[in-house]
Image 1 (cartoon, one colour):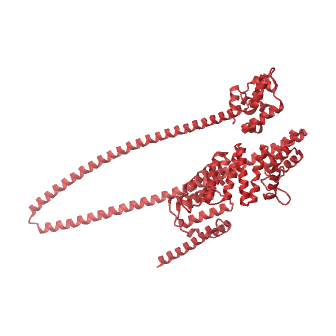
Image 2 (spheres, one colour; image 1 turned 60 degrees about the vertical axis):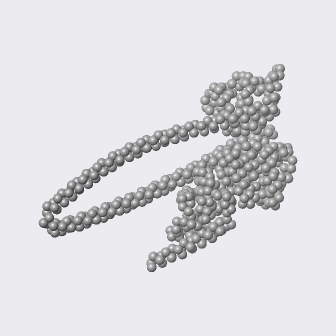
Image 3 (cartoon, helix red, strand yellow; image 1 turned 60 degrees about the horizontal axis):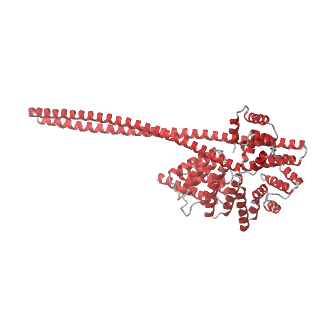
Length: 616
């Protein structure tokens, strides 16, 4: 009776828990904060929950914290690993599609934990597992969550500058956003694809996509999103020199984007708008307005990245205008300080993520150690249980044999007493029985010998198979090494192809015709300042990393940077000296000084050319 009452009490408690979990699940998308409040109220009852209810509770609670922008830590990762293992290996009694929605959501949240901890490869793997868990053939498939999964993967590829992979994931976002009729996510994905084109230098493709996105927002009646899409569109138009209609675009962005308060101050993180607007003013010849726009980026409220860009543009503008040298130096020095602060901030974030990852790995190792100890204890219990059962069976068998033997002895005794007169016959019978027993014993001995021989043969077979297994493992290791070598060769071949494509594009530069005409004239003439500026701008357009690594990172002067460009274009040192109106020895010495400035040691000509061609 007590057992029945206990089972009824457990059933009532379980149904109450499920009702609260269902309510929290229904509030998850509309009001995640209310769902989190409901789930936190169940925390004291987690010890009374069944395993299925407990796993669902952790899944919903972590999902609510994620929707409330809570930073997920190693504690969340440990919980979600347990939830993923549960939904991977055991069917849930509460979710109809155990290998669909619940399993996909569990792996997605585990990937979010790794993402917040700064472990991008692990996060990417869990997002792939979540996408694989989705059954897109089902009508009730959660395409909204699947779209979010591909959004996270696209963001990780963006952080790693893998823009082609980012575009692939964004196309998946577009596909699943259309299935769940989420036009905002679809248009956002198109905007992100345009941003990837912009980062890869494909500005015309980005411009075409952004114009279509802007028109789509206007057709949907979403003026705020339409105005916000003009931010990247205006920056691309400024870079391309397409200034027609930009004044109206900037005005629409300022009025409808919602990024400006009543006093005209821009929202935090959007200060790069003033950089693009300042460049637009430069194109119009309004240098004073450009100075004012760049100075707005120096506001202390803006992030370091924005302030660094403002100081850099101010220094450049002062230099172009022929302004005071002390102002140029001051803003250039300020730009350098802000750049160093930005790098220090990035380094601090990286160290913080490494510390979180270390704590997570340590906690995970402790959890694995405890799980291993628990498994060992359970195995020992099972072993002792098995030994106890075997001993009991042996004792029962011995008792049974002993009882049978006692009965047989009693029977023989009665027979001896009853047939004492037939002693001789009994003697012959006993002798016959004794001989039969000896024969049986001999047979048993022979059988034991045969069993031993069979056991030895089986041991030899096992040892042979173990050696074969070892050989197979060695072959697998060799194949893996060959596969790694093949991947390395493939990557090197792709780098060579990319370098050849850049060389071909450099050979088609129009400035090369000017260089050839200067060298072929009699006498040869040097390049003018406009030609040199044109040369640097064309090479920077084709090979932007060349300028970033040599001028920004290594802080080379424009003369040395021009010498590196001519070496990259394959111009001989003697011709370089003619084009720059320098002596051959000066070109050679500058080459040595450039290499020594970068690597801290002297070079050979082949080493310098190898370094120059390695930048792409």
